[in-house]
Length: 532
Image 1 (cartoon, rainbow, N blue to C red):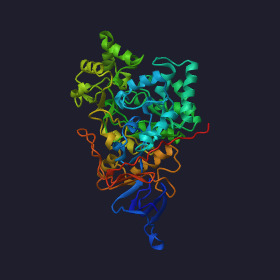
Image 2 (spheres, rainbow, N blue to C red):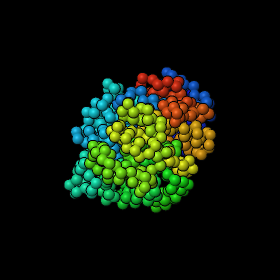
Image 3 (cartoon, rainbow, N blue to C red):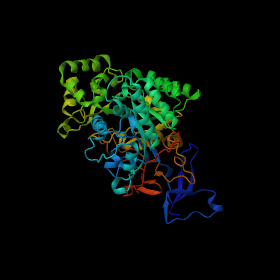
Image 4 (cartoon, rainbow, N blue to C red):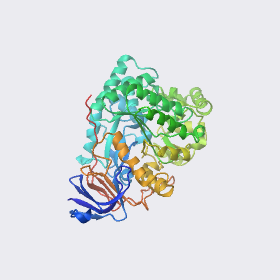
């Protein structure tokens, strides 16, 4: 064998009890598993390399169901932000906004719209236009060597709408809807695993339910799933969750709820209401899953807080309104008095808004500070040309714990890697689950937590040979120390790498070996091959 991992405590991803075993790997797959006790009756596997895993748990690689590494994987071959956590697969194209499918106009606009998530892209050759070309670009990245971790892609509904009809706040005409259907279908035919939406982001938020339902019918026909950032995580959260459940059931489309949190003061202690809603739908036959990150603050762009009407027409139209005193005062009233749809229907509390990154280096002094008031936010939006990212300290620990226990829960970092002071979830989500919520708090058992991070997301993605430690499965594996694994990232030092994860393998090749990043680029795109 190429590799034998000797005497590991196998946490196989099924949720069942762990067991001690030797695991042999050959040609990128798990070739043999010899459990302790069976070893006496047969020859233990041998390999060109034998790794002593005494004291370590061996699990499938972790799947980040909500990632924002769309350009980071092309920009940074190392990508230790995810590789060092044990992440072996990321799902990109989130929140309805990403870089394919596009034409020249749409690409320029989407670059501006999500500069705060991914940078402006000026350091990346954005030479693709279709979903298939983007996936090919990932596979051929870094001189043809590939990418740091595997990647799957969701067709972004906001980008599709932008492509088909610009930034107009109105229902689509039938020809425009037909064009959107074709764009979604083409993306799925080219390998996307589903479709995402950002329904508090423009222009995706302008789509009525009937339009979303029609696009979800296309997704369902190709065997994909719908992943919405729904219309409210605040004042209208439960109504927004119910809307997505009803919409996808009408379309016959599987539903995966993105970063399924209950935030802001209006939702303190109300996670049980969300879970009851989901349980009722599941018991009635709905196909639903969700992801969360194990932290209370959220992270987004400062411009995302603005009301939807203020964003009609795109980035330049937003800036023009911000510069106009009358329009800016109307924005302020929506933000501070009415409750903006961009801020989830809740009047903004500026003391909860912390600047985490700026696009213009001249504005670095603002990073780490709270926003004082609307005049300060307005100046920063204008000066930074909408490129500012923020943390919003609006979550509740009791909700976080309750939701992560649910039977359809999976893990997603929602990790924005841009900015001088990003959210620590970008570098710490998966070890934080294992260290904080398993070892320290006992919210989940080790076996349960690993299943949440491995086999459950693999099942949602319909991956037939990933997500479990099983013979003949692809050897995407993590070795970690249950006694020491922990997130190194903190709010003060968010880019610190985790501890207690000495080895990570993708396709049977070490991307982390003895705690150090190797030069291996074993990641490739994971594409669905649908038959409509």
